Amino acid sequence: MPKIFQSWLVAFALGASVMLSGQQPADVAARVGDRVITLKEIDETWKKAEPAEHGRAWQALYDGRRQTLDRIIADMLIAQAAKARGVGAEQYEKDEIAKRKKPVTDDEISAFYEQNKGQLQGKPLDEIRAPIRSFLDQQKTTAARASLIAELRKAGPPIRTMLDPPRLPVEIASSDPVRGDASAPVTIIEFSDYQCPFCGRVTPTLAKIRDVYGNRVKFVWKDFPLTQIHPLAFKAAEAAHCAGDQRKYWEFHDRLFANQQALQPDALKKHAADLGLNASEFNACLESSKYRDRVREGMDQGERLGVTSTPSVFINGRLVSGAVPYESFVNVIDEELEKNR
Image 1 (spheres, one colour):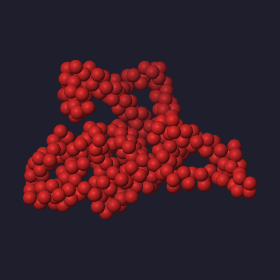
Image 2 (tube, rainbow, N blue to C red):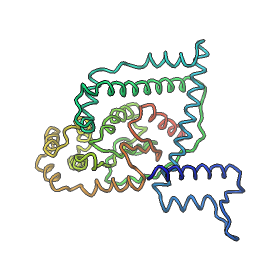
Image 3 (spheres, one colour):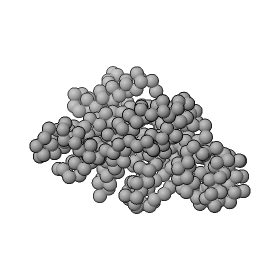
Image 4 (cartoon, rainbow, N blue to C red):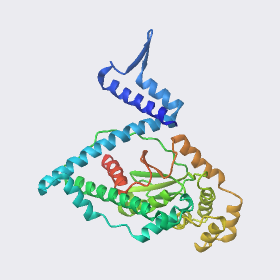
């Protein structure tokens, strides 16, 4: 969607919010003779006609408000902690981030280079080592600050956020791969791509969530290969379902993310053999494209929901986009668990 149009939609949503706050009687948006048009009618019509655009606009509005609210709360917590220590807020934040942040290693730079080699236009590692180091360093700074804020929120005064997040109903098909307790209060649905480096980067984060939250969360996988930039992703998605025929879907899934540079058809067959799958059954499934339509179903569903990038994760219907830090997922999960108490 063009940025200008998206900005207009957000502006419309903001205007609607203002009118709902009381500057217009009830929620009347217009009168045509005796006919009254309400904001509720407008929103329902918009949502029905353009569900993806409607969802993106309201998500953008919520994200802007929530990020600003979180920034205000974080600044308050840092100021309080700094005052208790008798130092300035800026110095306190700098010192605490330094405690939590580890330096970027050469191994991390090399790993990042290998994961993103296809998007680096063939540049040698030595040529782009410095910008990679800078990028990773900034990521570590962001993660360290998020960790600090999470600790301050946990140790500080009770915080209740009243903003109501937008939720999109994401239908779970009986054929969707699921792991975790079926009755878990938090459902995490991931639209993802096996060749996507950002999806690979978020995979350990999601694994940590499984370890920490146990049976309080369940995970659902949705195929969303970005075929224009990741030509191997679609077949890899098919292959995972072929492995599922032999009850090894998640083992194969994890192996693909551990070997994102080895997604060619022959490599997929080797992964299956290494996992002890029946080779003839797996190969026949893969070569016949048995699960082509199932992969496309995930893509179609994601597009209807307005998904445009991977990973796109829905936590009880709340969208979390990109390979965000662990703490960002935790904030949403904890809020959802609190609501279910």
